[in-house]
Length: 327
Image 1 (cartoon, rainbow, N blue to C red):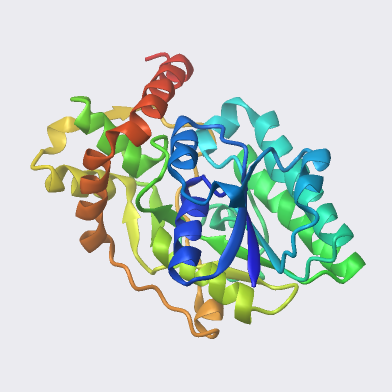
Image 2: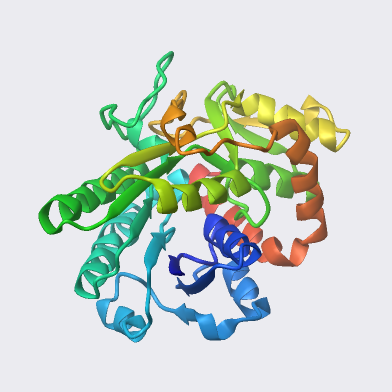
């Protein structure tokens, strides 16, 4: 089997490449190398002959790989940070909707037998008490989650209209090594390592469902091999934490106290709680293996040991953040 991994130098995509390599599964990768960290990872990547640099929304570029025998596409390529989508929604529409459409057309035209779209639990929106199942109604709150919901609907149309073998995965909040420093955990760690405070929106009572990226990778492969065509699968861990709890766990690991937290104005449309039922994927024989409290110190160590991979992106994020928030 040869798997085409799009967005292969993003956070989950790169971890998935490493996961496939550990399983001795063949792959080729596509990435547009937007971030500095993705460029560094590409430069260090040993098997460059397996990697193609272009944007999946460019159909003429996709033709570069049409002669490969591809057994499956796993699409991680996406703009993913909610804050960025609020201030630049058009970039998310281009990547997350138009890019997916071009990739589906490519898969159809070249008779690629499997297509896995990586979505998000954020398509369901926020809930106070409910646990969303795969059939729950979409209620996205941000341009990011709306673009991912739209991509799912397009995937579903290709499944129904053309009979393509398409599966959709909705992971909860991922954490782990190689995550871009704009997200909560790496941004908080990066701030502290740069003698700044953690920034928390409002009072930090928003609840997120945390899933280690390695568990996501094993779940993606399980759905690819065992999942049913036309179906969606939630992936979660059952570990729910408030943002303020995450912040305090990071501080504890670094022997710091709550004096190293700054509370900033809440972002527009901030969802309160994401929560999913993931019994469906467990029936395929998958279950999470990582525990947040055990993995967090390892992740902090990773960011301390790999400054060159994230510092340039972090400094660029700081400039954008100050401009947006008026800091």
